[in-house]
Image (cartoon, rainbow over all chains, first blue to last red; front, side):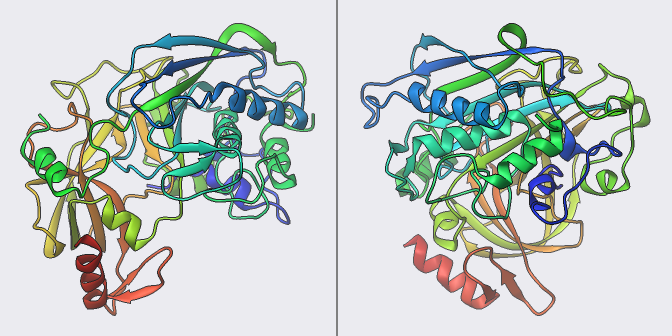
Length: 190
Length: 231
């Protein structure tokens, strides 16, 4: 089983895939006439080492990065907050403790595969930083937030560098040219 | 349900995060609520028309033609940001590592108490997942033995399907190195003898494991390395 949308960015730059004449999975996107908002549900456990790290500001940085691509792109521009009780299990992913974060994007199975929801979770065992330091248990919150919000926009991973949609450690956290090309392929020119 | 294996894994220290790997922050995006209005991202002409792609068919699990009706099912995809998967990271996250041949895939089920769920129309519930059981042949254990059952995260049920980026299902008959861990999703398994696949790396005809970050590795070397890393 292969997730096709990874091909979107993997074909950039150089041989862009056009989403104008086919509607494969890697071209799925949010509907053009909707409106989006984000709710950040925060589950903090004071026993955790990184409980004092407030990822909301990093999520907002990520939002701003995608707005720089196109102010009218289908990404949220508001973060509201719900503070919940701590949850004890990270349900809903591979049983792999080394992931920094995950995003689950849901779309209509029928063409044209419009996205209906996106959910990003940050692994709270990760110690977050803003110094572009990455290893199994440390990650830059700005890069991971921007990366995951790119998934929420409908982008997949890219094999190119530089790109914030490149999986893993990077030396930057802001949206790069490859990311812009991916967005343009999915949504057209801004 | 997370009983014997979970406790055993915890006790051995081989699994960091069965319970307690939690999401500190959950960001949910929804359509139709206030905030940004989509005004400038107009898809090219014809974009909203149903279309087909032979590439698409080769990449994703097949859906019935009836699933082309809007509202008749959802497809979800999980993507991760994570360090490069090395032999060390995958071994440390696993309670069992096997070299085996894929014999068959079973019937996918929802991770609900009875394995069933109503077809989805416009919303994929937060913790709802699909697991697909797999049967193995020619099992060669690199670390611990083969569990009673092995599950892949993902699969297709009716017009609903779940995909995991970078975690392709191997083909039936393919020989693979499987990294297995107890599921932290206690609704996914009917007993504690099931493990879920966290990584599946291909084995070529010459008997080499094709690792994503550690190069091509003969099976004997692979097994030795796994056993050393697990100590």
